[in-house]
Length: 355
Image (cartoon, rainbow, N blue to C red; front, side, top):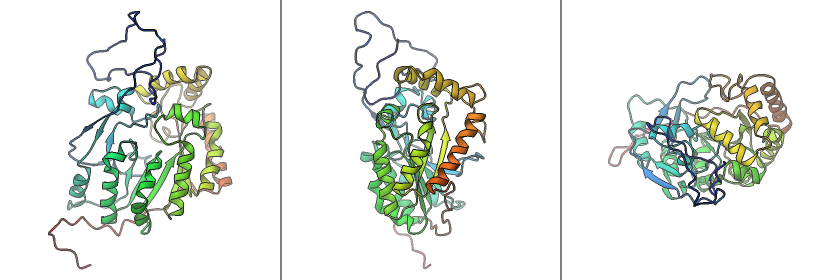
């Protein structure tokens, strides 16, 4: 029996962390009707005391080696989010917990200043939005992303941002300041142009039209902005590839990228359950197409193919994307950001440089 979805939430369940010693199962005792609407699920935010704020990686298929995640968990609640399994490290579920039990790194700005001042620090673009969205709804109150951008702008440090939220328009002043020195690039992620499908896939992310509007707003302010088709979902959204590229180009996007749907660890079961709840007639077709492009599995985590898939269907997507880029007059590669302007943060009371 499928559990009725919580309003504004994508996950249909809340399975225990894969590291938990115990497993809990719901039990129908006959007192409540099986189709009763579940109670609204509130979002809670816990302050996390982090030891450092800059994460580093050496993955060969990721175009950055430094990133910042101001939050753990994401209220956007995108059912396909590959970051969901990280909540298991906290002893929480990758399902509803991931989108409702959030953690804010309130001391991120202080930690960033400390790390940027280290003697051995070497300037390289910092990516924001690589794991959870820096402009998810709780950012309106916590403003951690803005605090980080204020420091990066003051230090003239390059940054890239990926987001599904129109809230990014709030920081237009800082982004324009960074863009004047070629220190920022923004990617707005658009999965579908269908508002009904987007509401079910990404219940608390900005509507597709608002994401396109954000692209236009950023572009008019002189901020380099692109569109990320992420993820491309077989059967559900793959037919929109060319339309999304065209709409983003018309709004002012300069470049574009795409990623094929990834379903690591718990995400595979969560996504399959979502399909049964929202797209039961297409569920088997979607999963079969995914397996066709993942060597018969729901996920293939190998470097070099995890973002694009393999096989005839994946090859067709790549061909369509290249043709779509050409028709929309977009480029796939964004220009390199400036790294030579960086200056380390100056603390109150310190002597300023003469140069």
